[in-house]
Length: 181
Image 1: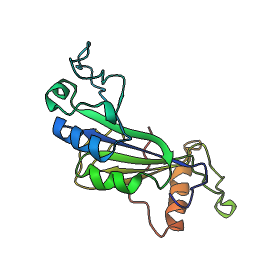
Image 2: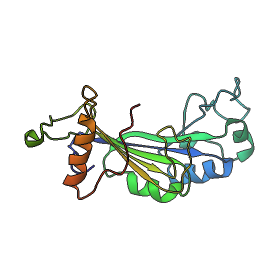
Image 3: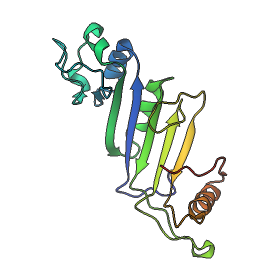
């Protein structure tokens, strides 16, 4: 991520929160976060004493009584478009074993003309998946995964070559095949 970071780069974090007790703990640990219920079985009318979590609620508005939160579980916790370096460490520390993601965006991959690689801004991102194997935070895993996002170019393996070149820049190697979303 540091290789492509620019002054305008941003970081967004998200975690799957499976229990009301954890929602309250994370509310207190990350008071600037937002909580949202994405599942289709959520109450159509807000539960008394609980704000409408289907629209997203700032942490400070999340009630301290876990009973009302039950109907909305699991919750998604997020902090979007933050300055790089301001939330990542604290978020990773408090999220524990929950499925989570840290995504750095608005990066800039430089060109490598000696490898016939063009500079890239639009698709330059890095995502760190914690305890999961899916950007949707729906496939639990016992490990973490780093995804490097590059432009797909005519299906000719360009993204593989670019990812390999980026990995070499930071002393690493690509360990899996390209994924196309």
